[in-house]
Image 1: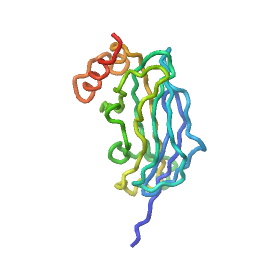
Image 2: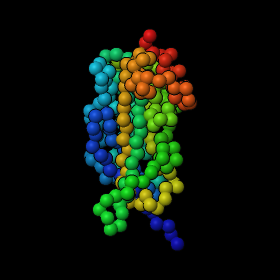
Image 3: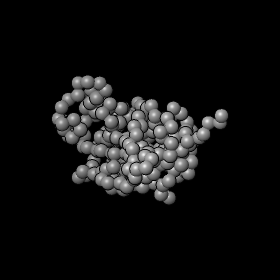
Image 4: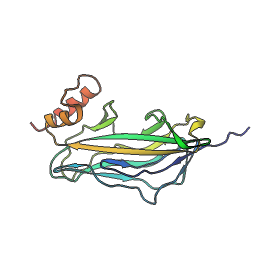
Length: 211
């Protein structure tokens, strides 16, 4: 019997503060219901620490699971001082429940269900706390990071419960000045990480910090 192709609807959600909702979705066959253009608004800023989220994405209507979709994500320093940057990637899937107007929230695990492809893993480090840290350098004003990732792909192993669900992908950008005390206080409540992989992230950042 021919297997039925399944759909996972993909929507955009509004942006608040540093939360920038972007991308793409899918199931065994994906329908993307989205605005005509990607939404970017309210870049995260603290004082003279300012950034701009850059992305290269062409709107789609359908995408087959296992098919990469171009989605390049970079951060530009639009402020006046050097800064450290971290980005949280937050996928969310909501599926309809028969006979109920509410929707069920389904898990979508990055690296298993949702693949971020062509990541610059030398420049960006997964902190294991939901954030990817830019460790290549303290980003100078007017400069841009390397790509966090260049495309996304949904796993071929998504189950049928994702059929006709709605997927949104949020990017939360956080920046801080390059003082050791500043980033440790803002990101880790002032503590010095001793467990991996955050200890490696801290080692990389402190060597680039302003002392």
